[in-house]
Image: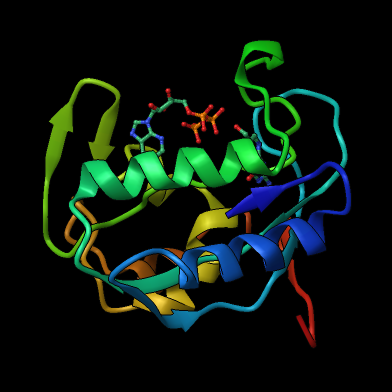
Length: 157
Ligand SMILES: Nc1ncnc2c1ncn2[C@@H]1O[C@H](COP(=O)(O)OP(=O)(O)OP(=O)(O)O)[C@@H](O)[C@H]1O
Ligand SMILES: Nc1nc2c(c(=O)[nH]1)N=C(CO)CN2
């Protein structure tokens, strides 16, 4: 989950609640919230990022459609956006068990998952043992991440 517009902490908290309300789905484990420096070369406010681990009976496609719906309800308008620009709410589907999938507009694991401190820090809390395509665990990738200074864990969020 990521947000850097319109009260980002609240956006992420509300997104977490929306995930918990999805049909046939429960929250398993949530990371802390992190304040993170923007990645991608666009001048914009810091982001709030977090990762939620869920248990769901939904298919990957149905879950992805539900994520897009939650983004839209948060006021996100994809048509007005620039790549790697500011977002009211961005919900990426990082992992789905051990599934590897590439179909149309959905790729799992998320292709840029292992490169990003703003993903690795919260993901290490939820799925530290998960092995990246490189064979390295998420926890190890986070421990060796050159951008550790770009993310700050918020204490009570
Ligand atoms: N696992 C995934 N989770 C989220 N989006 C995905 C995934 N796989 C493919 N996509 C596609 O990526 C496209 C860009 O999504 P989005 O606008 O959220 O990207 P972004 O946040 O700017 O950049 P990034 O994809 O690098 O996080 C979407 O059209 C979406 O269909
Ligand atoms: N730190 C951080 N940077 C970003 C993020 C994000 O969630 N966190 N999302 C982006 C949208 O593509 C672009 N840059």
